[in-house]
Length: 74
Image 1: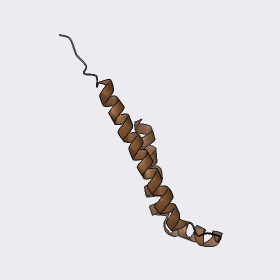
Image 2: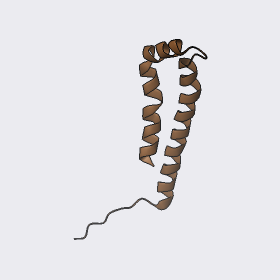
Image 3: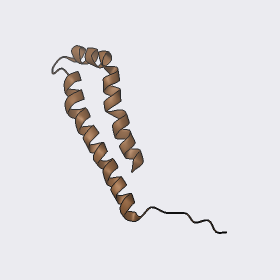
């Protein structure tokens, strides 16, 4: 008996890479525009630090895993 391994086509691999890249872009834009905008207070470092500490889960949940998963999938 011979074992056959089914390889995904290059087109499928390219589509998966493109989709993961698109996910990386979308999560990165979301993190930069919405999360950073909600955390950073212009000309007030103490308020920015207080926002980061108060919303640490939001900051970590949106920027790191989304972008990281897109990079590791490619």
